[in-house]
Length: 255
Image 1 (spheres, helix red, strand yellow):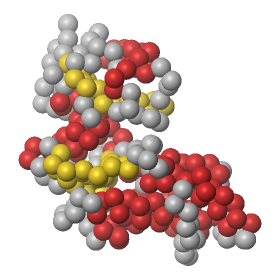
Image 2: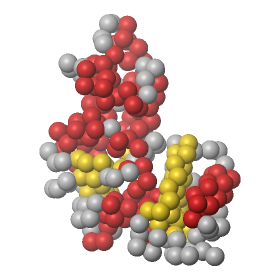
Image 3: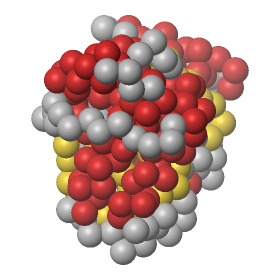
């Protein structure tokens, strides 16, 4: 028995996500886990856990996206991250015209067309400085977690200048700032501003002339979205459940 349930798997570089949707496109099951080395094994186990509460052994269709999409077993459709995030964002934010997806290893700015089709995109996949990994590694150096970013940024009276354009060199710069007595809050605000500057430059390549929908785990940080919005002069709002947007798009496009 399969019922009319489709599943999308987003096998990302840092997290593995999956959603199950019904015939109306509504999410009826969701799962998020840290990515494991063996995508095929993780997917087999994860899908069992995802579908068991629905009384299913397999979905009607399975779509895969993300870095590990080629290693998702039994996927009938393999979808680029661009297409998946475009379609997923359009589903949760009807009429969305622009998407900013910030993943662990890359960032993508997408201009959408009718039905959530990607018309144009710009991508940063060559340097971690414009991705979630930049902030994640820097926070680890400061002994902070993602949940500490918002309150820490709000405490800062100004942003420390993080001038390095390389994520590795930025860590060295952070050590120097702390040694000079710069408060941690100012360093964190500087990191957020630095990432926002790079992401705003990426967005400029698709010439946004309306609101921007942010997807990916990094979109959960309102301080970063506010900093980006200030630079592009357009509202930047996180999509509902931003980490699941890619998986949702894969499910909607699965055949």
